[in-house]
Amino acid sequence: MRRPLLTAVLAVVAVLGASACSSGSGPEAAPATGDARYVTAGKLTIATAEPAYSPWVENDDPASGEGFEAAVAYAVADRLGFARDDVVWTRTTFDEAIAPGPKDFDLNLQQFSITDERRNAVDFSTPYYETTQVAITVEGSPAASATTLADLKPLRIGAQTGTTSLDAVDASIAPDGGAQVFNTNDDAKLALQNGTIDALVVDLPTAFYLVGAELDGGTILGQLPDSAGGDQFGIVLEKDSPLTADVSAAVDALRADGTLDELARTWLGGEGAAPVLH
Image (cartoon, rainbow, N blue to C red):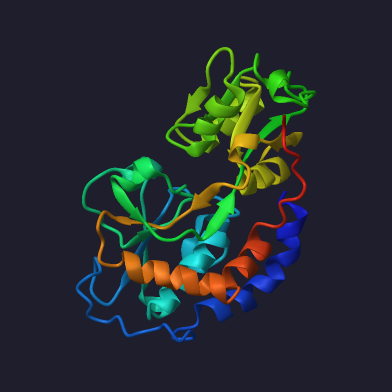
C-alpha cells in the first residue's frame, strides 16, 4: 500500500513531469549534441540504483520520470539542453558510484549525501535535496515504546553500510552492541520485519515510504538530532568532471525557479510528522 500523500499526487505527476522535462524550456538550455564531454556524444547517460525504490523512482522505472530523483534527472537534462529521448539510463550500486576511478555515466542520483570524504573520490553537484535521519520500527519490537535516544541505546539498531544513516547511528545513538550493518536498506528492512534488529535508521523520505508501504505495523520513532537540517543530496559525477559546473548551474536554476521544491512536495511530502529524539 502506498502512503496516502503519494497516491493523492499521482494525478499531478504527468502534468508536472511534462513541464519539468520539456526540451529547452529554461533560458540556460543549450545544444548538447556532439559534446565530447559526455560518455556518449549527443546523449546524457544517467545512473541510478538497481533496483531503485519509491519515492525516488516509481516502479523501478526511471525512464518514466516518476519519482523524485527521476523527475529531477529529467529536469536537469532539460536545463543541459537534452531532449527526453536523449536521456539514457544505466544502473550502478551505491558503492560503485562513489568509488574512485572512471565512470560509465555522466550523472548518478541515488540519495548520495555530500561529504568531504566522498569528495576525494567523486564530484558532487550543488544539493538538490536536504533531509534528516530517522529511526523507524515495527509493532511488537522492543523499540516500539522508545521515546528517547537512551531508550534505543541498549537495542539492536541497523543501517545501510557506507551511508550517513550509519554515521548517524554511531553519532546519535551509539548502540551498546554496535550498529547492525546491512548491504542495502532492503536487507535492513527485512531484518527489522523479521525481528533480527529492533530499529532501523534511514533518511526521512525513505522512512515515510517504508512505514507507509513496505513494513507491516511500521512506525516512525523520530529524527536523530545530530542529523537535523543537515544531510544534503547531490548528483555524483566523475572526479574533476568537465560537466560539474554546468550540472550545478542547472540544479541552482531549478532551485531558484521553485522546480525542486515543487517536485519535493509532489513526491516526498512534508517533513513535520517526525519529532526529534533527545
